[in-house]
Image (cartoon, rainbow, N blue to C red; front, side, top):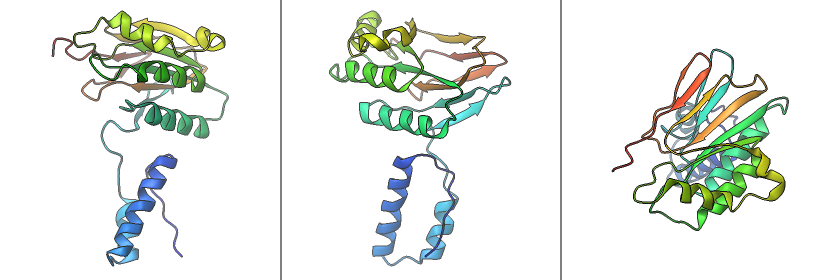
Length: 193
């Protein structure tokens, strides 16, 4: 038996690493070397990327675009945070894509977050307000008060209350998330593409 320390966070990553180890074992790879290699792995760009603002707010960027992926990431955050702080999820659904998942995404975000900001992500040929409305359809009445903003093209969260220690963005990885002092800005991707 051996222990392994990895840089990856969450049950979903533990399951993935277990599958990698099992496959490598079946293929006859040397276990100690495999464990050393696995301990050096970094997350994939756009999956659980994070940075900390000057005011100690942790910003996590993940391109979870399915209900299951969104749920896994939010559950992971809720497992590692102390519950003395709140969590804002910035969630968007792309246009001209699976419309049936939009209410599910809205429901999951509103249940597993302290506050939610809905955006249309990349609306393509669809009306951004329609996309956001479809996301809102999944929000139960008791959670509707958690929606603090509905943004069409740009999400800006100036001067966050100090109780908000986690901001999670579930937007397309083509978007860069920048932070300068107390303002977190997520620029919109080209909506004409």
